[in-house]
Length: 283
Image 1 (cartoon, rainbow, N blue to C red):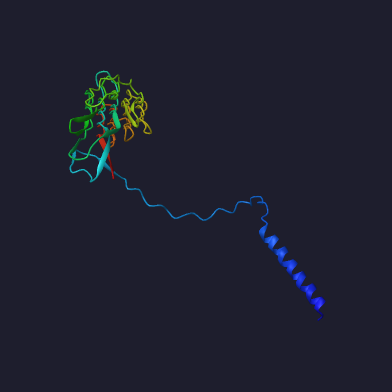
Image 2: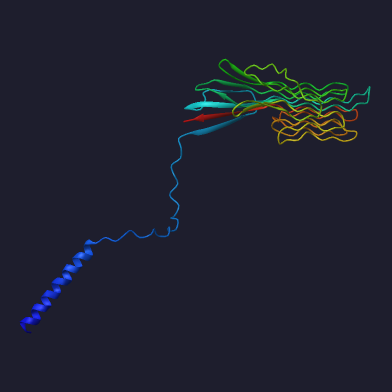
């Protein structure tokens, strides 16, 4: 190869190297953003929190001591016993009125860190025999230290045929005297809001003879018909007892509902007992 050709090739290679350097040192403008990619797979489940909730359903007199370890506070819900239905009135030929239901205190906050917590569950009122009114339901109490919560029992049905009134609505704490106005016969429960997450209701009232009892939240008053005793009022934890042509039905245990009135020459049914729910919140 001649020296002239070799020199030309060397010069050309040098120019190519300089051109590459210029290209490498030049940065172009940023391009437009690309399309977002598909969603990635779900991440792993996170760790559980440290808090725990312990619920105790109380159906009879009970003392909680000790309370669950590391309790920060608790809430109490309680309801009393329902009233008994009245017996048939042989003098005036009236069918017995159904018993009324208890009132309820729900989600009352207790700043509790140690026991004891004492619960007394109210009994349902006894059904009346012929020519006798039904008995009133008994109170349910929850006591801690100087605090005593009281839920009043429903009133018994009457031989006049009138249904027992529901217990009055608790609007003061603690030691409410239960003197709030009560519903008329067959009326549903009424409500009073007493704080965030806390409410109290009156009980519903029993039906007059041949009429149904009042409703309570999702529960329905006991039914009745011509020639039947009045239906019992629904309670916080159950339906009211149904009236029949003979002895009135009993309300379910721990329902707080009223017993049915007595049909023809028959006795009334018993009211349902009360109950309580204690919820402990621990760390």
